[in-house]
Length: 143
Image (cartoon, rainbow, N blue to C red; front, side, top):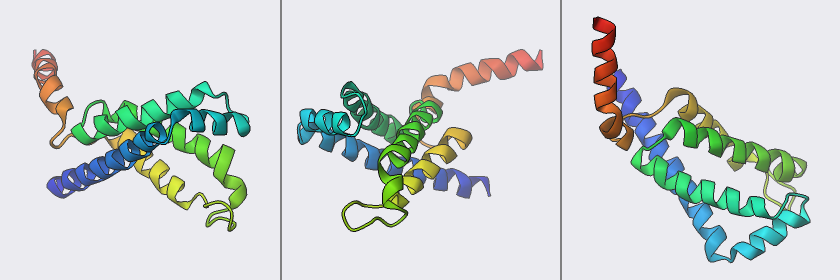
């Protein structure tokens, strides 16, 4: 059962990472100034466009390689919560014809929360970097 769990969380982590990486990349490719202007127009300080785009871009890569999964996922969950509450909630679950609804944002939020709570260790850089520290902690507890 554990193997199925690890494989499924790996799949979730990588797909979520790719999704956010692409969203962050598009913000920069489309001209981050446009995103800054849009943020200003909806009452969010423009500099937050840079913060969000960097969290999505760098966070996406971090999820793909499995580095800081819990922290990155928590940050992405905050971004999605902000997107739902500030932008999409008024359009409704499926949207209103002029704006997409919050259904996709909600799915991404729940995926991020799941990973923030449960982590994803299979094929992760965290396992390589912190494996020695976990073994040391295990030895310390045994003594």
